[in-house]
Length: 323
View 1: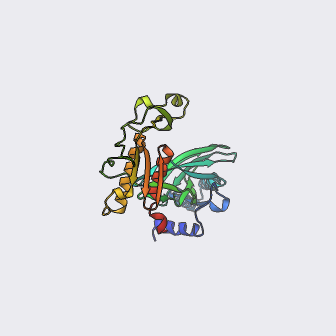
View 2: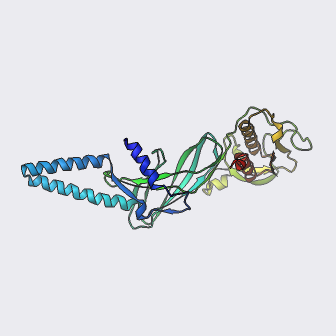
View 3: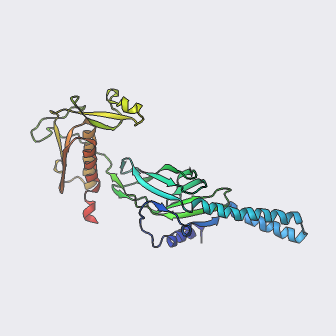
C-alpha cells in the first residue's frame, strides 16, 4: 500500500465527523498529530545501526552519540507538537473572484502563547503548499491563500492541513481544519456582444464612455484604464491604497440589462457570462444599471455596491433552485 493511500485513509479517519467549523478555529492538544519525516526516519535508522555497532564493538563513544541524538529527537517531538497546539486560525474571503481564476482568502493566525510559532504551513487537500509564515509570541500574523475556482457559485476552502516541521525537520506536526468561509465566485465575464443600443425605458441612447463630472458619487478600487485625473491622491497619501473617484451626472442614461435581450438558444452559462461582462462594462463607465433576470430585478443603481449585487445575483442564478 502506497504512502499516499495511507495518508488519505488517515485523513478520512481524522475528519470523519467534522463539518465546516465556525471561526475562529483553535487547535487543541488532541487534534495535533506527530510523525517522523523522511529525514527523521533516516536518522532513526542511522541511530539503530550505530547502536548495534556500539554493542558489537563495545564503543562507549558510540553509546554517547546515540543517546545524545536520541534525546534531541525526543525533545524535537515536543517542540513540533507545541508549535501548533493552541494556535488559533480564521479565514475570510478577500477580493473578487471570477470563474476560471483564483479565489483568495485572508488567513489570520493568533498566537496567545509566550513562545514563537515558526514556519507554520497551510496545505490544501492535494498537499500543495498555500502559505508559510511565522507567528511571533503573543501576537498575530496575516497571510493570503489562493485556490482555483473552476465555476461560479459558492466555494468553501475545504479541508486544509496546518503543519510545522520546526526546529530541525525531523518531526512533522500537523492538524486538519475545515473552516466555514464561503467565497462567492462570480461568472467569468465573456461574450462578444456589444452593450445594447437604446439604453433605458425612454430610449436615451448609449451611455457616455466616461462617468459624469458633475457630482462626486464616491470611491472605488483602481482599475486599469482609469484616468490619472480621477485618482484619489489625498486618500493615497493617507495610506488607504489606490482609489478612483466616481462622479455621477443627473442626466446620465440608464442601462437595462435584460435576460431576454439574449437569444433563447444561447446556453445558460454563456448568457450569464455575457450579462456579467455587460455589468462590468457599466460599472467601469459609471452608468445607472438595472439587471432583469427571470426570477428577480436588481436596481436601478450606479454605485460599486449595486454592481456587486448584480454580479452576486448572476453568480447564484439557477443554483439556489437546484439545491
